[in-house]
Length: 143
Image 1: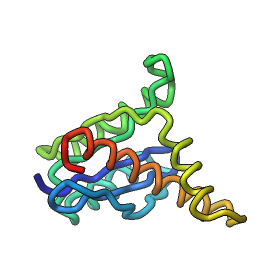
Image 2 (image 1 turned 30 degrees about the horizontal axis):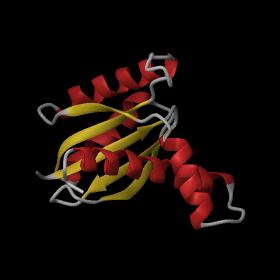
Image 3 (image 1 turned 90 degrees about the horizontal axis):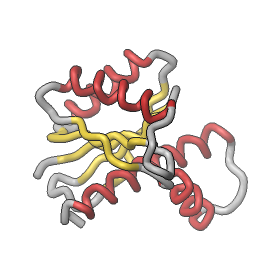
Image 4 (image 1 turned 60 degrees about the vertical axis):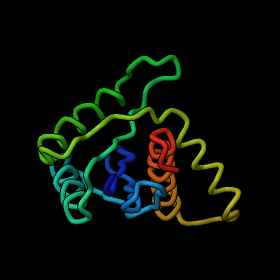
């Protein structure tokens, strides 16, 4: 199957997760922070190549009714730019509804207490990327 890289994309920050080579387990990799959409695409494409990803999945933030709002449209544009940068590695949008809430709940259960805002945001982005990827792997029968 090969490694799969997942992206939880935000306006300035993206949480990145990576699967094991067999496509069974997801682990947080790192956060990418950039004010430039082009730079974010370049940095994530470089991570995908460095880790020899055979596919990239990008969380698609649809509304609860399945419609596409402004964030979903922005992520679609980002995924299209990433697909151009990574060609021929496929880039796939995957439903990410409620992953941020699930990530926040898991982090509260795991590490109660106060953290700095930047640390908490990074932890949330990384956990959300991991959840997106693990859900994707499980749906494909990997986990």
